[in-house]
Amino acid sequence: MSIPVWPNQIQGLAWTVLKSMEGGKNIVQSSPAKNEVRIAQTYNPVWTFTLMYEWIMDAFQGAGNTMAYAPYTDIEYLMGFVMAAQGQFGDILLDDPSDDTVGPAMTAASPPEPNPQAELLLVNDGGSPPIYYSPIQRNMGGLFYEDITDLNGAISVYADGIEKTEGTDYTIIGPGISIAPATPPGYSWMGLVIQWASEPTPPISAAFQFYFRVRLNTDTVDFEQFMQELWTIGGENARNGTGTLKLTCSRPVAA
Image (cartoon, rainbow, N blue to C red):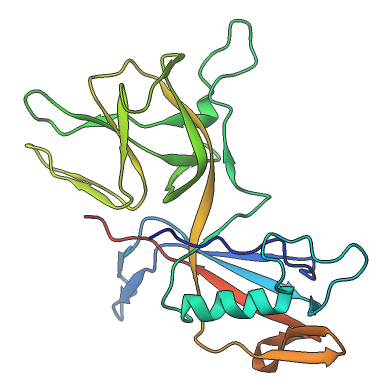
């Protein structure tokens, strides 16, 4: 079953869109002498998106309803989307237009070279012969690799500057993969992974667009009509007259 994509085309979304990050989900235990034991329970950050709607239309003016979900109005489609997700139960794909792209895989130099900002890791399972893997991740500031759970369209993958073919040179598995090499430690990723048909020549680089996999952070959403044919998100979720919805990252468990 395909995962529904959050309807960004619904009108009335206000600036700013708030995006918060929680990292580690850490357990911190401190002794009276202030000696601490800290345990990180997660690797990937947990993103929360706060969407603030100033208004949501229940009618279409001018040329009429040209949305993909016509003849339904914005509020009808949004209500149906929330109900279909069953509150916090259903996964949703969210496209953050300001943060949804990795690449290009190759630089604009002459001749082109692998782009370090789009470089993927290359590991193997230590078997005989070994199987090689490249987790599909994004490089954050050269300091952190974040797992990508869902692609938005095709991916272009290069090994040592040569483009490779999906289905021949590699396959994509996951999301949610654990690999136990013959010699520990193993590997675990909560995103998609490239499994190579044979050992590739590094560096590995890739270009793609991606979604954030999220869920609603509540089972209750209040819809408020404040004017004829105009609605917003109301009730306890309202902020300064603007209704808010929160979407929180939801990652699959490694298999």
